[in-house]
Image (tube, rainbow, N blue to C red; front, side):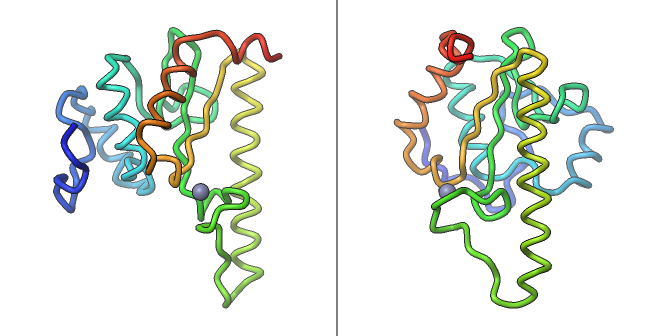
Length: 158
Ligand SMILES: [Zn+2]
């Protein structure tokens, strides 16, 4: 695999063998901003390597997962540790100024994430959360993704 450092600084919003987004999709991506982050691209690149077919940011799937596998009813969220409050992670800091503003913002983010997972689960979907810091260890991430997509463990758990 080519090192990610070789990616251009202003990375395009898609990997080379992903389908072209529609103009509407493109506009939406520009507006939302926080999509197609570097950790998300790392995950997508691995998935492409495995040959899995996935969909991105589908608005018609509950919780609008970053990545989803409609036939398998599986969804992946790639979360930035700071914004989504990865518990116990060194990236989960709180700014020293306007602390209550930030705390409220984070509270809303975490509540939204929980709701998304609950909505998906209610509809029989399995969801996997990949934290930004977990994309650093690519081989560990690879096996998590493969396990998540290939077996039924998550269904038996319930
Ligand atoms: Zn983290």
